[in-house]
Length: 479
Image 1 (tube, rainbow, N blue to C red):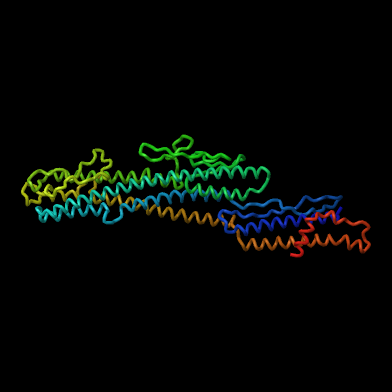
Image 2 (spheres, helix red, strand yellow; image 1 turned 90 degrees about the horizontal axis):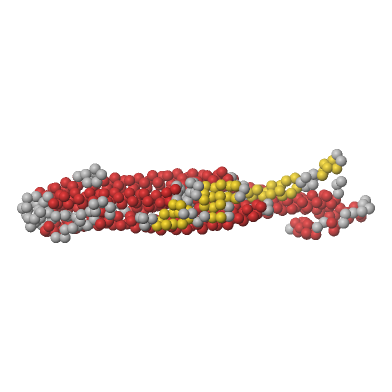
């Protein structure tokens, strides 16, 4: 049967439900600018009714739960794009550093090759001029120095990339450990049916940071969240994380291991993959090409120099130090062997004023000395390849950034906080709260009014109404 106490119970239940909805709305507003926050939607549910005879009586409303608005599929797409962007960021930044070694500056190999052959042309005008002969040796030394500096700088960059890789591995381990800890906390809360959304938001943020470093696949199961690489290497399983380690390989670089298995070549995205691609593929290829050019150029010039005679009438020797037979390290070790300008073999017949062999030396400029190409063409193609890697990588990076921005905007429309919407919700819940408070106040006054009117012989004692509810009602009324 309906009663004042039943009506009071409905009203006080409504107060609690609307207050909970207001709290959730306030929390949304407070976190409007919090990165990674997923807004909460209060879910109000009608209580089970009471059936008396043929009449069904409602029993009010309850705050069933707070729904965290997130799209797992969209979140996974965002993580995939973060991985792609991380890989491209690492690759492009590293290749831009490598490109600096091939810019058209005074120390550029291409310019020094051109200067060397120009010095031969100048000497041909006066083969006995010692100043011009010294100019040839100086130009040869500058050319060798350009090869040395470029090769050494690339090797140094490779070492720096190796250091960055070890630092990224350390950061991966920090993040996976934090994610495992959050997994435990989330499981504990969900196990007792409590809201874990703040910790899920934190975990999503950490997974995003992890995705920028390494390729990550997420698997949600009853036992919790599992993180693996795209190739199935476990990173986090529930509350346990699996730390990555590094070991120095035969080349003196750090390889990445997981539980004793080398996974270096199995990383496909994230910054680590981009850095590894430059360290293990691009820079070694550049160094190999420089060695090919340095060895081919030095050998061709030495052969041409042997065909002539110096100012003493003696046959020419090596102009450059003989490169290693394998060619490996030729660029870093390239050096001029002759120090005395008298020993430059400019003559083709032994006569001091002859310049016939200078033409032979100059002809090397157009000879196929490296991979069937002349020195200038080979070097130009090498520089073009570096520039193409940078430009194509930058274009892909811009595209990836655009896609990621679109996905994040889409996430914002689902999970983000709209202050206008929250203001409207707050007004709606406030009005409902005020209405329920008025019901409580009215019921509080009804027994006294009825008793004074002599209508009721027996009234509901006010002591049946919980004191905290009355206090909340009075506070709301006078606020």
